[in-house]
Image 1: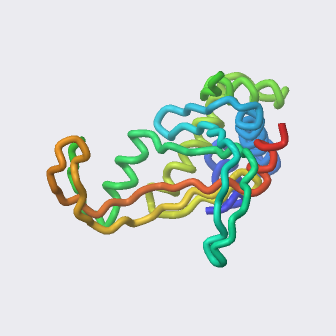
Image 2 (image 1 turned 90 degrees about the vertical axis):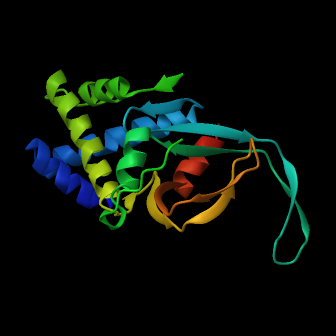
Length: 102
Length: 95
């Protein structure tokens, strides 16, 4: 599902014009982007959470040539799927419910 | 600081003057429900400018309990991965 399909489904679900649903979707994506850009994390119950991890600079290697390269410090967002969604995604595979404990 | 669903509702409410708070809440819930349904049905979710949520099937494999060293079988499972878009990565690194 891509963004425009999501917007269409949203418009239908909340009974609003596509334009409005698009604007809501953009607000949500912009708000989440803004939060991560300022280093904040995001926590949405039932869905998952995002955290920004900071990396110091390190010396890496080009895996193809083996050449050493310096990797500058960087930040990357990480997503951790929430418990409810993780379980529902997993129990949907092939219709078979695999009960794993942990 | 942590952004929560309540903050998302507040932002939608603030940036859409014609919407009531209840409508803002409903729309955020609907957005999340649609996203979840797509992933649960095994569909990937692509939010351009933000990132891509992929649904991946993992094969069963033998693993170990790292605490005891006991060998055990991990069943096949289905997981969600997230790959941030280049735009999101750039925005996070530009400050």
